[in-house]
Image (cartoon, rainbow, N blue to C red; front, top):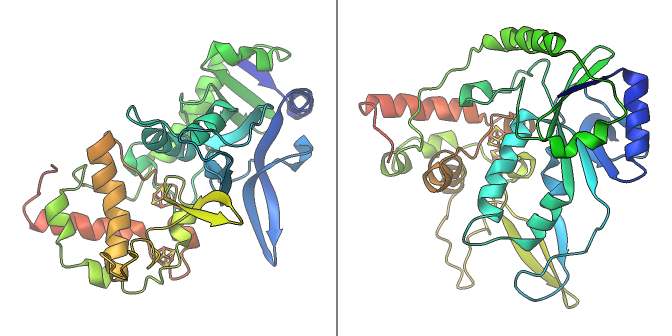
Length: 338
Ligand code: SF4
Ligand code: SF4
């Protein structure tokens, strides 16, 4: 089913939905002299911008950067938030990233009740990308930036027309006020966009998962990670990085994002640190995304969103790292994964 709206109708729709739901969407935020686009709860539809990929991912809605653990009992969920959220305008890279978080937090063997509560409380409306930014490489990793059926509703914007493709009829009631749209018009948009994304000048020929032993023991990690400052910015911006630590303050327990890029991340109470140097930590980050997660869950833990390279203070570019891995494995005779 397709529903269609113009800007005015979209505004009316969001105003009506905001009576029953909290709405979160990409908005422009000013930080000093910088202008950033980030997902935030909104007060009015006029705050929303869909103009480009947000600088931060919507990860914080599912895994808050700081979250108080209300009860000290295994499996106890956090603060009960009865009002559901509609998370509006999530692009393919971030929809695919959620699958990685689901792999870990909704694992068959262990369900994280806090994550599950957030996940069940949020209805996602996806968004088709009309163009990529220079650092995006989702297409190289097999992700389609134009269409994605992993959100129940997926939006295509063209000028003043908003086409909502409903993938899960259970959520069609959200759009009941809108008229039906034309399948042919939407197919045209998809075709145009697919053609504009078809030209991809970043290619990769890597076995997935990366062969653990050969890649781990490769000699290039020291050179590749030489300039890494260990600031952790890449992991905070990454939509798939999920490591966290626990903190106790005045008897209250919280969990907060942590980062494998921090020197203290693996430091034991004895003082021993199994990952002593920054190149070992950087290797861990790449290996986790391209070797360990695919090995464990059959999926890359990188969606090519490009945020780690956009935000790294020393311009460490994961694409060139992957190219180095590719050349090395080819020199080694095209080592197969496993
Ligand atoms: S953002 Fe760049 S410098 Fe900072 S930890 Fe990540 S790779 Fe290293
Ligand atoms: S590793 Fe970089 S490109 Fe890949 S998902 Fe994380 S931030 Fe995006």
